[in-house]
Image 1 (cartoon, rainbow, N blue to C red):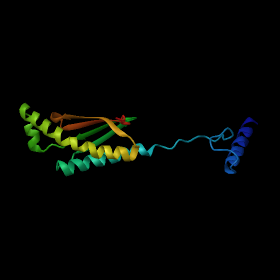
Image 2: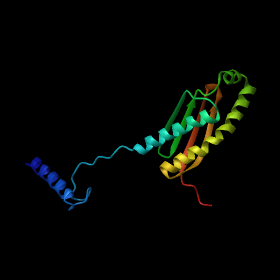
Image 3: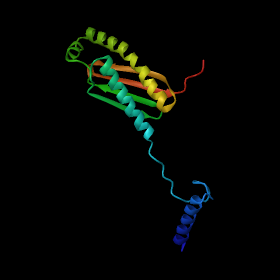
Image 4: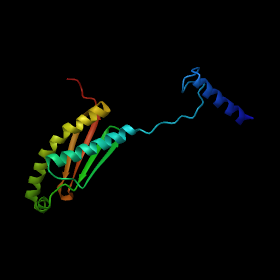
Amino acid sequence: MASLAGCYAGQRSEWMVGMGRAAPGGPTDTREKHVPMDETSDTLQQRLKETTSAFYESNLRCTPREVEVLRQQDFIVIRVRGFLTKAEIELSQQPQEAKLLTDYYSGMLEGLYLPLEAVVRDMEHCALVDKQVVLEIDQEQCVFLLTLGTKPTA
């Protein structure tokens, strides 16, 4: 009998919502709540990946082997692997040349922040409040660390 009453209450709730007599999620709405998957985060990650790849191709004239984007709340990590040429890999074996490569790429990759910030602003309506690039030339990878938030007013 209790299950019949529960069934009736659920049907009554559906009917009341359908008739506009109860708001979805209101006190008489006993329907099971389904939270839709957050597609915004997936879309943001895909756009950041595409923007990063496009930057490497157009500004550095290379196609990275892999671009990986990870997000945890307001923290984003973009890892780019396999972007050095064979000659650069050879040069990176020498400490002085590795330092020159690191300096070169550090300067060049600064230009990526503006397009990344535009993507974040358009999709999340917030700003990059902190950004850092970590170059690991010996491992042939580059890691961008981005923190999202609101910029303080000056």
